[in-house]
Image (cartoon, rainbow, N blue to C red; front, side, top):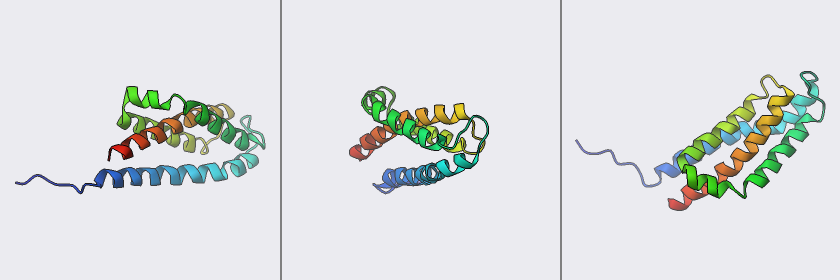
Length: 128
């Protein structure tokens, strides 16, 4: 029996499909987060918590971008893509039962994971 041959750009399509699924959920969650948390007035959450969470997320993203290449170099692209994708899942899941501590912590973790994810994505696509 012959060996199964995959198209040359197969990995690009798989990576693109993964990004499509992750960022469809993340962008939806981040767009409705301020609205959802404004109406959710318990567990320590105030009306402006959604805006603070996104500010924390993008601040952590900016600062982690400086060290993300070193992280990707030490851990490897595949492991970084998987681990960083999980940070997006965790951030999205916080909207199911919001608590102030979990939302703020996972916003910071997701910001750090975002820098690593985009750096690893750049390395993978450059190699292809």
